[in-house]
Amino acid sequence: MKTRQEPRVDGQSETMDVSVWRGGEDGAYQTYQVPAYESQTILDVVSWIQQYEDPTLTYRFACRVGMCGSCAMMVNGAPRWTCRTHVKKVLTDGAIQVGPLRNLPVIKDLAADMDPFFDKWVAAGGVHTPSASRDEPIAPVDPDGDDRVTASAGIECINCSVCYAACDTVAGNDDYLGPAALQRAWTLYNDTKHDNRAGILEAVSGAGGCHNCHSMGSCTFYCPNELDPMAAIAGLKRETARSFFRRRKG
Image 1 (tube, rainbow, N blue to C red):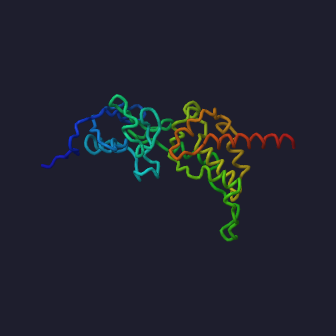
Image 2 (image 1 turned 90 degrees about the horizontal axis):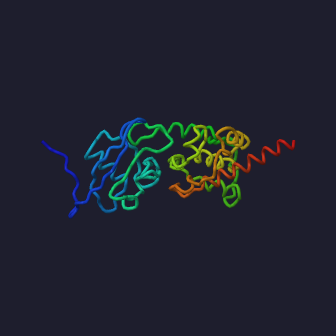
Image 3 (image 1 turned 120 degrees about the vertical axis):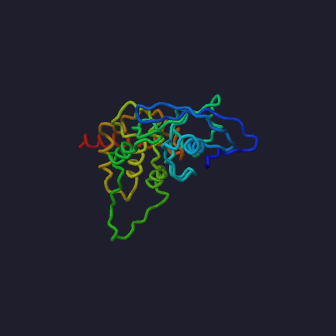
């Protein structure tokens, strides 16, 4: 009968202790001894455990090259894309801890429920409302215009939820929309082809909106695409305040 063969590297003998969250919300960490190789990522480690130690381990990944964001997990307490996080950068005393993204319900093991994240994305006005129909001529957009530059600054967000997991305001306030949703709102607010700017300001100025942000900056610090959600939220704070005083002035 065939048995699974563990991968071997000439001269390889070192191992590391990898603690992985197992179960749902009431689960616990389980530790595995994993071989340490050169150029090894955290996703490689998780995949090794699933392939050679426990095939029931549940986690997400897709592209493996830092494009999709689906492999995001907590690594030693920090949210990261595991496909881009090399073991040698996070290994501490020969050990690593890997868990599901913070601030989201746990489905099983390392897979978090993304529904609350996307629900807030929609609640913040994140759905594009076109200002013209497909039958009308395409309006030119100046790529160097202030609005376009501001909108483009957040366009590379891929909704990996790293910023959401990093945010302490989200951790303490279930109603807070979160940095990704608010950055999307700011992107659309500055999009000249979006036809509901007033609706965005209304969506982000209420309970759980942009004024709940404490400007701690974890969202910007941890964003793998080097975006700046904190700046986007600051922009929304300014525009909602201006809108309020314009209405008061009459």
